[in-house]
Image 1 (cartoon, helix red, strand yellow):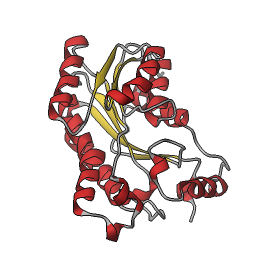
Image 2 (cartoon, one colour):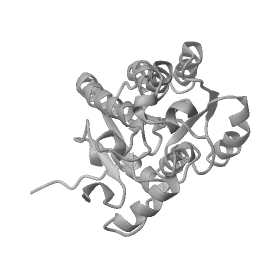
Image 3 (tube, one colour):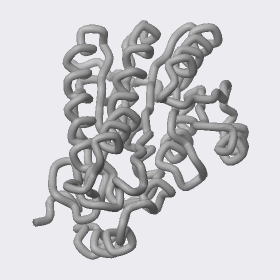
Image 4 (tube, helix red, strand yellow):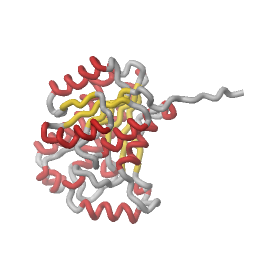
Length: 260
């Protein structure tokens, strides 16, 4: 006879969400989903200009903390995790949805990318996740889950994705290695690979509207995903129902990635 077990979803879970720019951001969709499942939120904003857009969203979500975070600054990274430790004493979920490259490097082909631009894109879009994980892990006293956002261009050539393809490939590999290193502490790590979404970050890609239209026609479900589809996937993966999943790159793209 099996004993039926029920699990709370995310009631009382402490979640740090990094990368909200506006209400179209993937990170916002994730924050909203975490909150719907009962989590408490800490939300960051990139700079004073972005605070004007992020603060109303944080207020609407009832976020416990709203903190500045430029991921290139060690002092701001330290301050975020120190404040979380003072306020909560622990962290259960980290969501990293941050990517950036100089526009001139992003819009040219990989061959034309500068060493400086490539390095900056790698630092902000990939290694910042490693830096966050290093600081978050000691706060995940009962285990936890870490997420970062990738894209199919990490594994297959997507026209106009350019230098971000290799950068996201490095990010996915980093997630796997972090899953290996942090697994003994009960910490699970995932890269999430959404289909094309209309976000401010994506608007910097050349011919992005064509990519959206192509994806909607090629997807087996014949429709694009939205930020809340991504959010609910992350929320599920943060629950005990996904307790044996780690190191995955999970596609949330209506099946586009299976098509030739």
